[in-house]
Length: 504
Image (tube, rainbow, N blue to C red):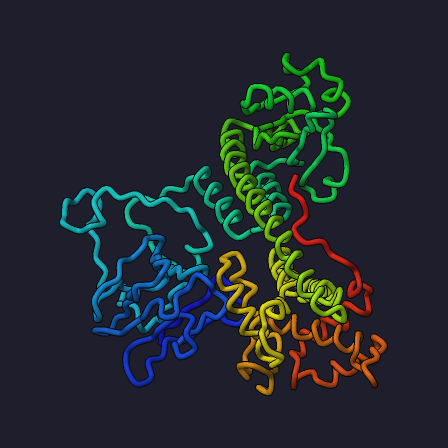
């Protein structure tokens, strides 16, 4: 039986690999509707009925159901087709649905025998779409190992393209600036055999150098030991530089920083120009036995271009998020002005949720979404027109569903009053997104500490934690409760964490 593997997406914590079962028919429908075969609750860009996968003639096909944002199959957008027609799926096919990325996995029994696949031998002019003088470039060694496909025609390994491909993958999977830059610097050092590598910033006002990221990582906390002469020349002319021996290079030999640092082979490439600073990628190798060569310079230059574009994109996104956060704080303040008894509640919930998320090993981007959900979880009280406990959930969903950037936090607001045993409200579900489980625990902790005791007097923190532990596995997710206790024990539970720090 074939299956779909969720490679990445908002529901990654809930969904891993799903078997394609067709009870009562031959259609497997994916979308946000609760009655679908596969429900993507957390993906705001996914339509209610987005795609269907169907079986036909012992093969499997995918058909877009006139979705709002379309469907990509192997990177190409497919057109909606009549019922019974669609794009054929083979083992390894990639499928993009909204913000969710799947891989189609066929069992060995589903794949045709190897001898049935025939290609024209080299130099033969047959009508096959693949054959003759064919060359394939090996970009992804991991995919090659996984799928075990044989090369058709001549195999060509391109060092430059492979490295560019890997950097593109890093950029695509990292949504936070510093982690992305750290991974890029480390990868560049490995690709060029550099002993040290830096993403160096030159501040325009002070003319000082600093390190945004370094390899080895511990060097980032120090003033970068690089040649300011080389850095300034690269910035001035926006031109990459390779020197096989900076000690003998006439352009730089007079530089005290080169002489004192014993810099030998060096590469420096421009990355980005900003109003207050310039950034370069700087690589060093103190050994003359294996100096950098022109291939290394080309690799570093290509990576520098990609890194610069990615940094601009992330910083623009962060700026939008900071504007969004300003709006969120105004809304939260408005809610708390209506009820003075909950002043500070949303911010405390956001901080508790952040500490829990860190102990669960979530990424910095995921933690920022958890924090945002904590701030917004009671926002529906601003628009609620009655005292019914469900009203603020419905009001919040109506408000926030109109803001695209809040799609990933919406499930937390919708389900933070649900319970594992199905006795929560308003939907009485038993399967909750992880972000909702975190907000549920954080919200209950603050309620207990604030007014959970006799006559509305708050409980001591230890007593509140004991109450929550008693409900572990019933009302609350045990893993989330364990992370809460761990964050209390190490002191991180009550630390305030800022959202969306200013970018450089």
